[in-house]
Image (spheres, rainbow, N blue to C red):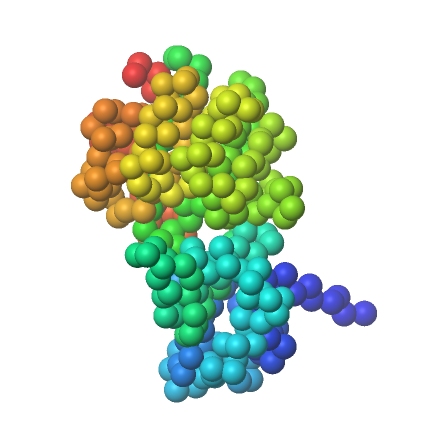
Length: 327
């Protein structure tokens, strides 16, 4: 008897005919998909293990643009109906942010005509593009870096910033760091109370507030909460020892992060960037780096696939090869 292939749950976001095309892909191809981009009037583009490929009507991946199935305006309407369960009103807040988070931490980015109200974004209509970003859990992704994030001399975790360009695995890495800190995996002597502010529902992948990803037994999650407010809420209500936040951004985030550090909480966060010099020039991050807030800076790349650890630096930007303990 042949075993039945279990299709990934993110396929449910597609209209039936597109789901059929994707489900015909070999299991290896489905497992390697990172993004699926659908633009009205253009072939459906699939990012597969870092390569740009196009989905054909027969359910294959081709390098040839001309072989791809062209996404139509009708397809776009059907897809929006599936995502919203035929009720755009329920997506009002998501359309204002430009993305919809799905169960499991998957995310659908949306672009089209922006609707403004008194200078602020009210929503998006005439949607012309979708970007389905597929979230994957990689247990053990942080194994090689964990010894460098632990100070054996002070017996504490370093304040850590993970720097990465898009699609290089920073959310996957920070999720596994949270898991290992929560469990107390080696070299940590015990498990720590972890608080995650999961603004985009990508780290823990909560459904009705319950994490669908393994973020550890001592972890509390604030789902769909703005980072700056969430950090303060968690500190007041759950007394975390370690705070995990993805994609630190504006001035409010920076201020909340500094408040967290001054409250004695260890902070692990991520930021978009190519290298240490790049993030040093970002106005929101420069104050944190110039004050030596981060004792470890992890630089990611795709050199050997998503999650490649290019470098681990100390607070002065010098390479680190051991856990140290004198800082």
